[in-house]
Amino acid sequence: MATKIFSTAPNYVQGRGVTANIGDHAEQLGDSALLIADEIVLDLVAGTVTESFESRGIDATSVTFKGEVSTTEIERITDEATTQGVDTVVGAGGGKAIDTAKSVADAAELATVSMPTVASTDAPTSSLSVIYSEQGEFEEYQFHESHPELVLVDTELIAAAPTHFFVSGVGDALATWFEADAAYQATNGQNFFGGRPTRAGHTLSELCYETIREHAHAAIQAVEQNAVTESVEAVTEANTLLSGLGFENGGLAAAHSIHNGLTQLEETHDASHGEKVNIGTIAQLVLEGRSNAFIEEIITFSQTAGLPVTLGEIGLDDPSDEQLGQVAKAACAEEETIHNEPFAITPAAVADAIRTADAVGHTVSE
Ligand SMILES: [Zn+2]
Image 1 (cartoon, rainbow, N blue to C red):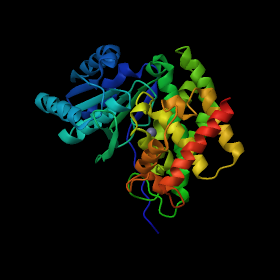
Image 2 (cartoon, protein in one colour; image 1 turned 180 degrees about the vertical axis):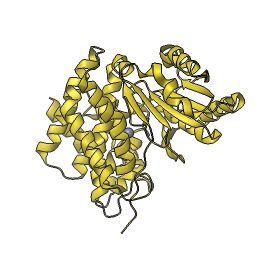
Image 3 (cartoon, rainbow, N blue to C red; image 1 turned 90 degrees about the vertical axis):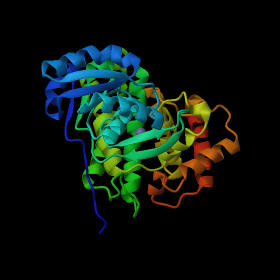
């Protein structure tokens, strides 16, 4: 029997206002910390984070993240961390700031705290960074030796952030179960640790899906009011912890490969990760030959949540065969997770699934 692997971040803290306690939770990680965040997030959290660290005798400084998880940006901030000689890096913001912090920590052998201020992706809990070109095209997954030592999620910040971030996270989380289940069914399906998925990884992915289906619409309404409710807590956990544990331990499949393919087209760069993933999810369901009724149900659920269901909604109004061919070819690259689907994959089948998903999306949304 093939080896099963399950791996996770050791500490996850979630709740209203927990930013003020970051020093307590990170105390054992070292004496000095570097906060990595873009200008907006620094304005939002630098004061509270620094004060909390200092109350525990930890020196804290910050560096402004320029916005892309590129090799150049990682090297620039690694130099900064090395020059300052810090013990810990704190990545605050969205997936890109956090992924950058993880890569910096890996390069400089430091501890990582991941502090998502938006529930937009499942990056915070994972031990990998998604590297993009400076122009925003997907380049590669970079695997790290370990997970962030601490993941700290302040639901007050999550609820106060623009709603579209939260909606994007729902898109990313909705894919988790379909992808993990594909990898589980496939004889050679693998998770991100190069092992077979455990029952735990599979079941946490299913819980992610159930939580999203039960709470997403109510949670999105609450976040529109900047309100923290139990549904917001539930969906924040699904978007961040369950989706993160689910994708790493359960494995990804077609939806994320199609997302990666879509990043090849500049027209899609304004659409968020979760938005492009959602197009990938619907295309995956078509590729898998799911029933009309089920695909339509997922499209309706997506639409109510405010997620895109057509290519036009992610910037591709009238894609040419050539463009879709390019997306499909990239999605089917040898190292892509699409090969976790329990059947053979061809670029032609993927391009047709994307086109059909778009047509069904139009029909249901009209
Ligand atoms: Zn994702």
